[in-house]
Image (cartoon, rainbow, N blue to C red):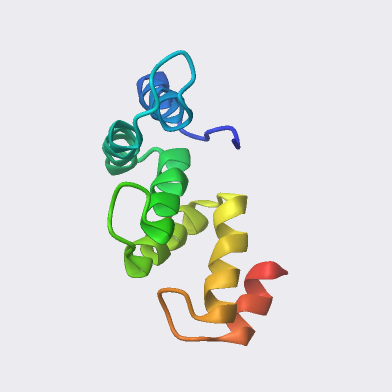
Amino acid sequence: MQTNHNSDSNLSGIRHLGYYYQLGIETEKNEIRAFELYKEAAEKGDIDSMYQLRCCYQHGIRTEINVIKAFKLYKTSAEIGYLNSIYQLGHCHKVGVGTGKNEIKAFKLYK
């Protein structure tokens, strides 16, 4: 996990709790609860949670696959400067996940 640029430790705690539920660390694995926690923190502006939530939408982890929502979360967190999202947004443009293919945009984001 990338460190969070958000200084609100409460949001960081919510995200970490989601991560523990997702992987079953010190608790029973519960991907539904993980999804809910990521969504809660993401809606409050937690960048890392936006990234985790987009994984849920892109891969259908305890929600229906929704590549458009995943793309929007990538875009929001990339605009803030989250490096993983910038790279993944480039990939979305390269192969057309949640948006049309645009190799020029992909190249600029990779660069």
